[in-house]
Length: 155
Image 1 (cartoon, rainbow, N blue to C red):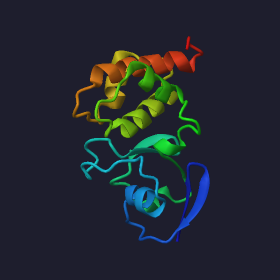
Image 2: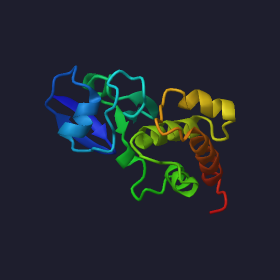
Image 3: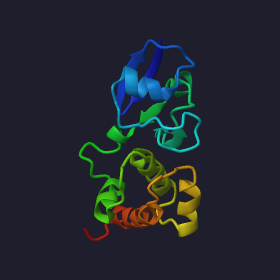
Image 4: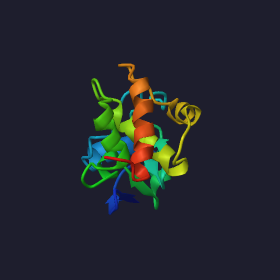
């Protein structure tokens, strides 16, 4: 048994320790917002927070999350009103939307550590997240907008 806290709720999970955290989140807990794409930590679609740090759930074993706080896209905000989520909507970032949960989770982690990121900060933090629709300029604009919202910027 592995003890996990996912989105603030404690779970006792009976899985193999090496099972990828992604499958625990999606298949065992039924939280399907975190996406599977490459399975090799190359695209960022499966990004979740582990004790506040972004990790690729597709290659993170469940045992590595034992006793830690896991936050998925579903747990970022109860009402979907996290500054990054609000900015994503305002800037109209998504096209297909598949990569967006991972993009949002990476952006939220960036803004926690760097509340006023430069373009270079954003590019560095987001470089592991691939958007096949090519919405990178809108992603950058949304991160700047989220930074402003996080500081009480105009709505």
